[in-house]
Image 1 (cartoon, rainbow, N blue to C red):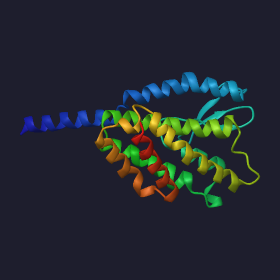
Image 2 (image 1 turned 90 degrees about the vertical axis):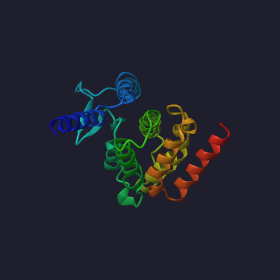
Image 3 (image 1 turned 90 degrees about the horizontal axis):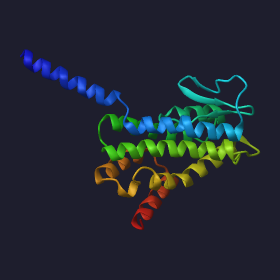
Image 4 (image 1 turned 180 degrees about the horizontal axis):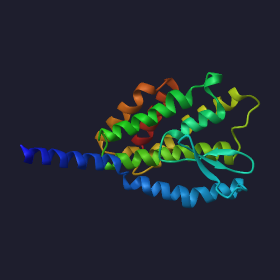
Length: 214
């Protein structure tokens, strides 16, 4: 009996270690964000005067620049909470961040914990996560293309941009969605299907079409 208990404890410890320790891709992406993307943003937007320009506030990473605060991309889902705080799209009836981006991101994380993805699938998920977040920052903060006369116009543009930007991240991140094992493709659909509206479904079909030609 004691031997069985020891084995169970050992297996539990291994399981917890697997779930607690981030996959290597996470560390790699975080390092690139810190050493490559952060300097890129500061070159484009300038450095804050305080010296410590990248801060964590309520679990959200915010880059302080002379002209604006920027939601800094990372390998977690709080980026979308930061974007909602910044643009307040829910108040305009545009629910992209709160009802699509954030819950989908969280569901991916949950399904990773449930080991529903292969190692390739996990690498793809985190790579897509960073790709999508960087795309939004580049569009809105670096290029300044999200400026509109009204907040509703800003939020509508963000939603339209992200939907059109998604397929590229899906195809190009990691090994690319087209080349993932069937297990991962099924798990991806299981993850996103509950949150898809008609426009998102059209983009999903677009990805399938691109895969046919890949």
